[in-house]
Amino acid sequence: MKTYVLDASALLGWLQGKPDAVKVKEILQEAMRDRAVVLMSAVNYGEAYGTVLRLHGQDRAQATMTVVQPLPIEIVEADAQRCCHAAEIKVRHKLYYVDSFAAELALEHKATLVTSDSDFRRMGHGFPILWLKA
Picture 1 (cartoon, helix red, strand yellow):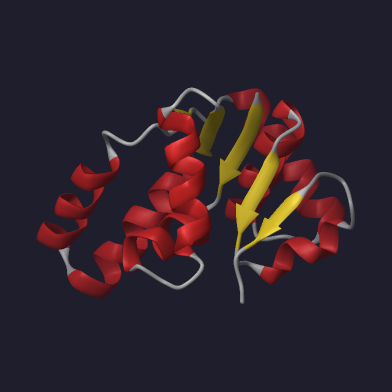
Picture 2 (cartoon, rainbow, N blue to C red; picture 1 turned 90 degrees about the vertical axis):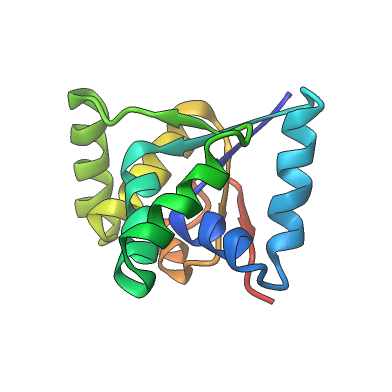
């Protein structure tokens, strides 16, 4: 079974109905049919929430995340071990710390990272990436 990791840009793109959101929609549909597993770090989930909060305020942010909750996305906690691994990835690849959580999760689960964030190009070919930018 295929495993995917969404970063905040992937979730936000789907929420905003961006053109590449169709790829995220297809992945979520696969997960609903038990043909894929979709993971997201709690840190990246919080980043998505924070972006909506900053742009649209508390009420819209809460309403938006209510839409996300029933989706087949497993939110993975950022325990101490994951935080340290993410920090190592951050330092090694010069990523933003929040981005390093998505990378850590993809590496841990041998998953495909789904993103539109070009900063992940710094990681080379450490794991497969599904790029959402057109």
